[in-house]
Image (cartoon, rainbow, N blue to C red; front, side, top):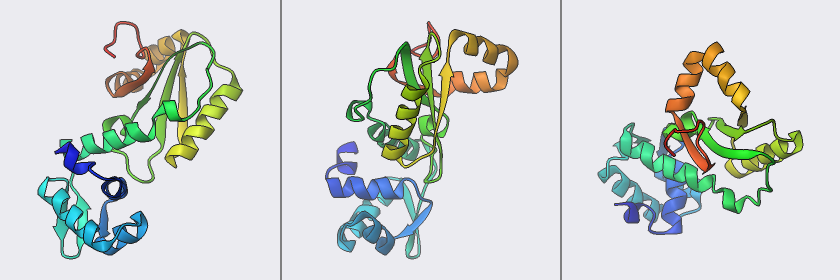
Length: 185
């Protein structure tokens, strides 16, 4: 199934477009993705058959469910590929990852990217600004950074238990160690 989804670059372009929008026509996808209408039409029918989309007249709409979220998550991780960013080292970095809608695969076109950085102490502002800028340019999303020092983690546990619980249960580690020692990677 996955090989059919990502078989060609054209299919991947179409998939990137449709996974971030709620409704679209074949013509709209063709124009925006730069792929001919015939290929778009056949591929959208395939996606409909796989349970990613539903058709309503001339429009297609993304379905909500585990499979569409998983596909979106794969596309998110591809977009975040840190090895291609040329990201310089961040002093004291222990781990880095995402949380929120990007980690759950529920993001859409206007979603911001929530990124956490685990460090023993606050990294240099210039390193954080560079990372934020580079990721924003790469993803086309507003990037929110959350630096998690041991002190910040303690403060979150005590002062904002709902946010802390949400963070701990809805994050992905992209590089290095998880948010807390002993947490699964």
